[in-house]
Amino acid sequence: MQKINKSIQLIELGVKPYKEALKIQEELFHKTIELKRANRKEEIQFLTNNYLLWVEHTPVITLGKSGKSEHLLLSKKQLEEKGIEYYTTNRGGDITFHGPGQIVGYPIFDLDNFFTDIHKYLRYLEETIILTLEEYDLKGARSKGETGVWLDVGTPFARKICAMGVKATRWVTMHGFALNINTDLSYFNHIIPCGIQGKKVTSLAKELGIEVPFEEVKGKLKAHLANLFEANFHITQAS
Image 1 (spheres, rainbow, N blue to C red):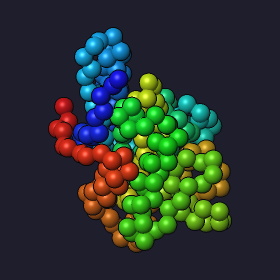
Image 2: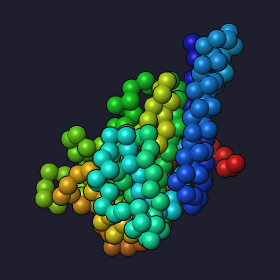
Image 3: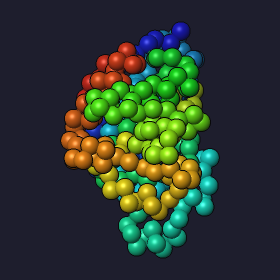
């Protein structure tokens, strides 16, 4: 039986292009999977690690495996002119934007350390965002059939504040969530966000009318993640 590790290594990546952060994710993801495979063959079982990467990306549009390329409203030349990178990726979900002013969290968790239920995992990520928004007197909510966190669900004013898309193999996760804090929302005009027509995107700063400190929000997110997953965090320096 695999030993349980509920400690999460928190890695601050700072500002990084999408491709560089993806490489770090993939290295940790595959390293964890390989250890799990090795554990199946050995009598001595080694603990698998859990990681949470914090990153703020330079402008990039990513298309998930269930996405449609027509949801990108710019040509490759126009993307280059605006300094926006573009990648297709293996996460779930459709199309989204990452960029300055947005907190991106990439949990690379071995769910065998917590619970083996991907639906529950996604709901916990959403709940982390919802509880954080509550601390700013904002009522975040889930929208049926649309992963992520929204405001004013079920009204003509529904708007998305946090996008999510994950991948899991052998119960090891990667990719994660992107919460708009002080994001320039005009970037979302270049896509049909998450492939959903007619719904807007918002940010914490837009809702509150003030710029919001990044570290403050990350602290709240971390506390709620630790509580929901019954985990503890420790800081790891990025390599």
